[in-house]
Image (cartoon, rainbow, N blue to C red; front, side, top):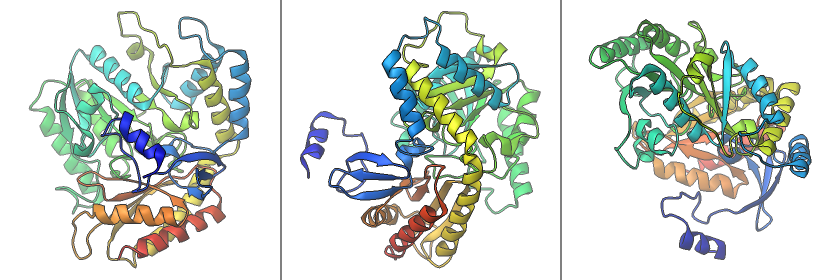
Length: 427
């Protein structure tokens, strides 16, 4: 155990998870690469949990942060804030929500917390629908709606949560059905559930479940849900903390794969927009955003230096069509990983979209999750010079691959080769 690890254990919580048997200290990064305290270089396919969205040390972002820090770093929302207004204008326009209002927070957890506050106040109900296998944050209310036992330390909650089928396509009671039949069964289940409860405030759902292992339903499920929800005036909250900003390649927002009945009532976002700086936020129709009848502020949400980072990062992403790059390079990477997975008995599924790829591992010859294999592959990938993540619902047996959206074809090939060797070493 190195000195920093020992110091970490002596002053930080036991439940603060660390990757790797010998935890890694990352000291600096550039582009799609990072370096550790021993000088080892790694290709980064996890980006600080999908947060370094464009690139490490992106000159446009570091310049914007430096220049803004030289003027003023922070003043709170009690004063007019030009960078916050400018970023809000851009996010509102991109959201697809009519008459949109934007509220900035410091994290995805806080964004989802705010969305729940808005929905329950607007609808005057403390009942929330959430998806099985979901994850929405670490606060008291977001833990209370999270449908993933591994990330739920308490059953206490200010909300009544009812869990809906559909977030995982290839497991559960409807997995054997075709896509259309799967959607129909999930909608029938939702209708039945709503017949046994008081009207909920909202359904909150990740278009692709992040911590759950990059699982998703067939396209159109949430549009079909929306039709049922609208009949009862129940709001739809799309948790885009991991799926926003073009990461899925085919769409700028994950909800756009489910757009037949219009946009969500509320969108939450965070992670990638700040490229490592702490930005989260909520977009909602004005009547929903303005429903609170008490004063509120945010001390650190929308602070000038993070807004400058977000503006520079979003501008770079749009100007360089990183969504298109995620679609093209992500498609090549997915094809390569699926070809590898087809040869290995412990790879159950390679799934995802764009540069958001999950590899689910099982014990060969069974459908049983294999968290030990996932941990072993994580270690082997690091030894080979590649950083990836892991997740999964019933057990942590899915590898999570989510590089910065500027990933090149050559870097995708390099990472795929390292990951192939790591996977083959597990069986």
